[in-house]
Length: 314
Length: 74
Image (tube, rainbow over all chains, first blue to last red; front, side, top):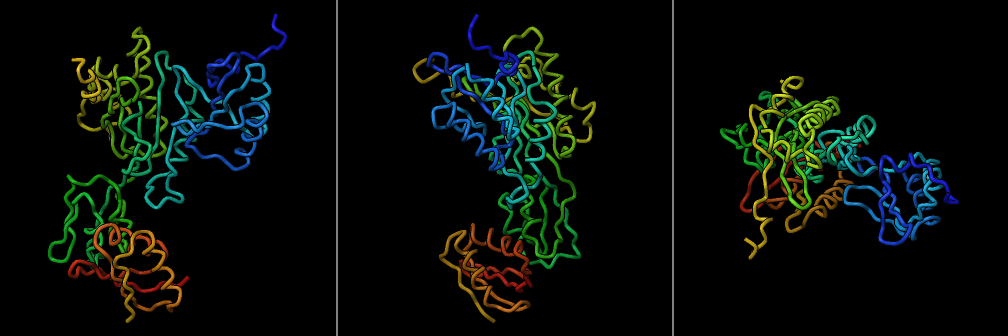
């Protein structure tokens, strides 16, 4: 029997990642949306100093990773981080910690509360076993899409649909000047809206001096089936203006389809299952509970064809 | 009417300069800003609106824009 006993339940959900060195692990921490209090940050620094290498790594998905932690210290690390409610993240075939941009509280571009959405998903779905492969979710607050929604299994992007109250318009032209997509042009001193060109950014609403432009509807644009890694796929559009409060349910519906359809497929990501099963199947499944929001049709996740084969390999 | 020329000044320096100029102006006063095309004309009006000032109009001139604004109260 080993002298040090470890609570193996800590290891089950993942978050402890084997390093090169003997007995050493990286401990990935759970930081949904990449936001954490300074008190938690101070506690993490203290634990990293005590048990780690003296530095941390910021993962590309907004988690803090403690480096060079001896596996014998796992329980102590978990207990001491717990003093500031800091939890360990997961790895493996599970729903991962959601990422998010800063959201709308202080970022002038943010249209929706991505931080709130990330916390809800973390609370309700984090660590759910998919049975197949990892499952990544992100929340972008606006069409700038800093979190890169189309490279996630389910990626959300904040969106507003603008509406003009013509009587309140003073014809200043600021909205047309602000619209980078060319969806607004001035004609006879009034803005003319070309709905087909609108990407839901809400710049017209933000700049309008008289609030003649306002939000007719607001929510998330949803892209599904994206991933990066060895064989990247770009996720495609499945729904628009999904209300913020229904984001968790929407993800759960996608997850249920994935869990069922990937049965027996092995370690395969959602995007590849969509390619195999056809996007119609997933879209029909989502239409049951989200009929008001799903698009009429979409396409399969987009393969980036020039990634492979490499030049000279064809 | 006071004209504040912000041409040739990049974001966000132009916005900060506008803020500083507005500090010395009485609430309710109408001011004119000269802004370059591109990012400045797209960003500065929106930022000034967020600060509580009233945008009155935008006019295209030769190669730049004039923004009319009424200073808001604090």
